[in-house]
Image 1 (cartoon, each protein chain N blue to C red):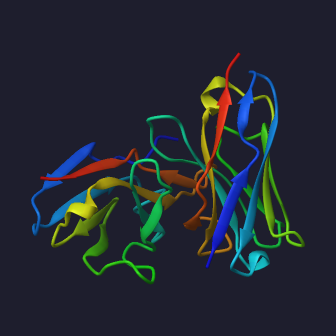
Image 2: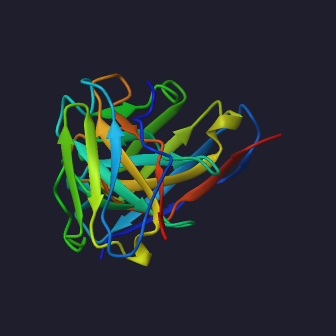
Length: 120
Length: 111
C-alpha cells in the first residue's frame, strides 16, 4: 500500500523559512517523479513543484520560482520542499504526491497534507 | 498563467449523468493529452479519477469517464450516487513555464 506522510508544516512569520518533508513507502520511490501541490484555505488546488525520479530535473510554478527548492533523498525515500521568503499567500495545506510519469505532470497518490501558515 | 476554467457548480439527481467541463488553451488542454481529473471530499486529500484524458486508474468506478474536444476536456459521471457529491478538479500539462495547471474546481451536488 502506498503511503505518503508529510511533515514540517507550522506557523512562520512573513519572510521566514520552512522545510517540508514527505516520507514515502509502498512503492519504488526512486522510479517515480514526485510533486508538491498546495491548497489555500477555502480555495482550489495549485501545483507547486515537481522533481524527476533521479532528482536530475526540477520544475516550479512561477509563483514560487526562486523562493522554493524541491529535492529528494532516494536512500531515505523522502521528498523535501525548502520554502524561503515566505509570504502570506503561501498559507495553504501542502500535499505531496507521486506521479504516473517521470515528468511530474500527473500526480497519482497523495498524502494527507501538512498545514503551513504564514502570519505575524 | 491563469487556471483552467471550470464551472463553479453542477448538480444532478441520483441515477442521472452529469458532465463537468474544463477549458484551457492550445498551450495546455488542447495541445496535449495530459489532462487529469481529481475528486476531493471535504477535509480529505484529492483522489485521481482520470488521467491522460480518458484513462481510469485501477479501482476507479467505470461510471467515471473523460474526453476532450479542442481546448475543452470533460468529466462525465453516469448513474450519479450520493457518494459522488464532492469537489472535482481538472489539471493539465502546460508548455508554459508553470508546467502544470489546475482548474478552479467544481462543486458537484447530488440532489
